[in-house]
Image 1 (cartoon, rainbow, N blue to C red):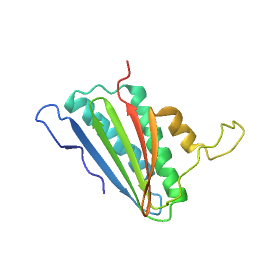
Image 2: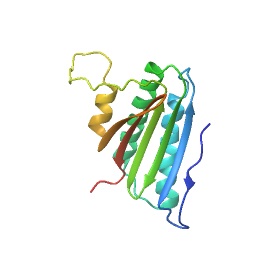
Image 3: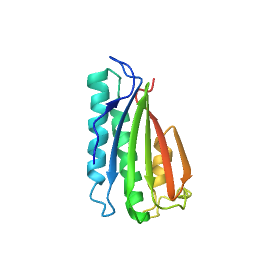
Image 4: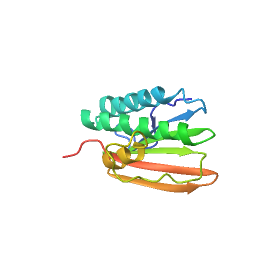
Length: 147
């Protein structure tokens, strides 16, 4: 179920806002995850006056799409997408039930497929992978309004 952005502190300019989406095993929520990212960042920009560039919005949609697609492809069970804005940084977290960490393959322009984590790593400021039994969490951070 999608959750609306939620303020965790503050009155006019919250220091942290969150949104999340539980993902089914059938993969039908990939588009919904992208829409949640757009809706969440639009709320951050329009209602909380945090600048979000168009390029950051496009980057976040691609990162969310790649992470959710990979979770659906390689994890046998449910997954959870969480997004949190603190200041001008978005933290995108994807937890899935597969404990095996993904490997970033060397760039190979002629390879068909398996570029998801390569794309996420190229677009995000930082990507970390953490073991969280019974699965793993991939965290990508994106600056919403780079100078």
